[in-house]
Image (cartoon, rainbow, N blue to C red; front, side):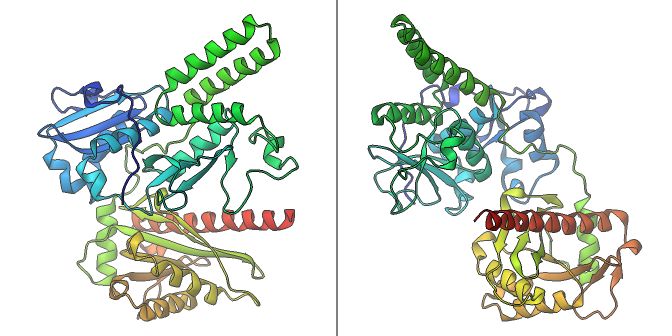
Length: 438
């Protein structure tokens, strides 16, 4: 994939990193920012963090399988502190684009990395895409952004300061009447001043390029200019915009903090599952599934993902069930699992935990057996019934009781089961609310 070129601010270069003298992560500050791992002065990996010390330390104390590939090769650690989470997010994107660290590039998946696109029109529109240049070859792009949720939260926050149009294919920028976003102050409305609107979009682009000081200085200059002209209403508007931008950039929470202390002992949990499934295969990725509906209406499926016992929310997926007619939980589960297995690029799990009893387990086994991908046959399956907290295994007529398991195993199973239920019912309620508003 060709990544569109974007001018990198000269402020953001390797010389801006502060380096640890002795690889002691205790010397890293507990602030937001960007960190980098090196080998022979070459970038191996660049990441961002709410708390730099906790995040960098986490790579060493709780290494993921990916960390294990390069963690022993690191001979230098650098970091850059930022004033806010948003600045850390934007700086990470710029540095990855500039330096192309080996392991950021290797793990880059076009369907996971996100770009922000701004169309080149009289009234520019904004959209998100995983495939730059495809939707709009002439658009301006910012990215790649590793954390999808974080950049979407950032754009939502910035929209309060710089109202903009969202892109929709074959649609005009705006209808002739004000929309609900106009009432919230997030949309320029049906007939904006095109020149002024483009100026606001340029400021938004500059923020995405990491040029916060330039935008703040520009707003201050504009405010001073209109004040000298005694246009006090316009000056007040610029003052409010300046204040709002500073608040958003300083206080918006867009990143997911990393827990420094692991809440589960994954090695022991893994050993327990290896024992009951009679396998020596390493287990890392676990997925849980639940279905939520009311008499078949607004049916949803959820797929929370845990890696080494820890929720990996960037990998969560939700499904809007397409089956119509009489409610059939088994058919809905089969649909969700079939659609999930069609996405081998998400990486198949080592373990699937289905919310339900023998019937749900049988449905899941059937889907696995019919999958055309031979890798699906390696997935371990079990189901957890709520009533007595029983764990059902394929080929085993007698369920295992959670109360008879070690506490760290039963707690993990209940955690991932409850997370699947929470995620499914949240999406179900969202769909019901939307249907009621129609």
